[in-house]
Image 1 (tube, rainbow, N blue to C red):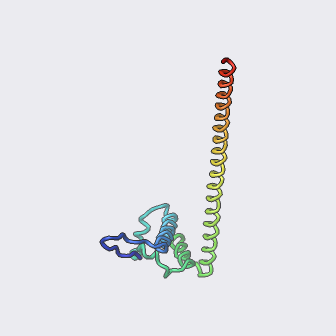
Image 2 (tube, rainbow, N blue to C red):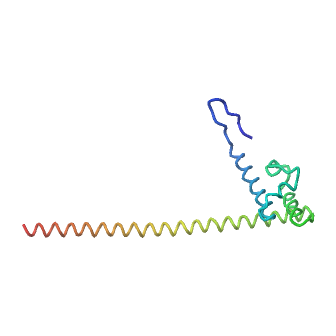
Image 3 (cartoon, rainbow, N blue to C red):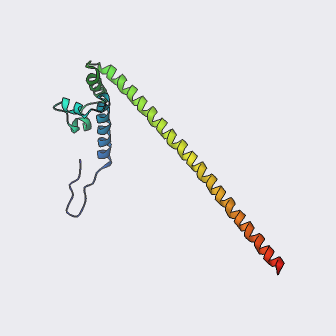
Length: 143
């Protein structure tokens, strides 16, 4: 997974490694969510290691079946596992889309606010230039 560093270089973490770690973290987070974030659930399964969550040996529908079993104590069929995964995937996509829309909206509001501030600053600078020009004209007229 990681390259072994030499005495002159640092280990290189590859994109695929990061992707696997993020997916494992998401799976662990789901397991914790059904236990109200009680980390002791990880100890309830003696053979459960981080490698289980990083592994590609368990497909997504079987993982859904396992999560459902842990949550309810009932084993669902493989077909139901696929449906559970599709539902989970849809919900996650929807949450991600909502989150991105909020970011976009906030960025748009911040940009609009920044443009208003910039416009106000430019207007203030124009007024200062006009005042300076008027003062110069008054001085010219006096002399």
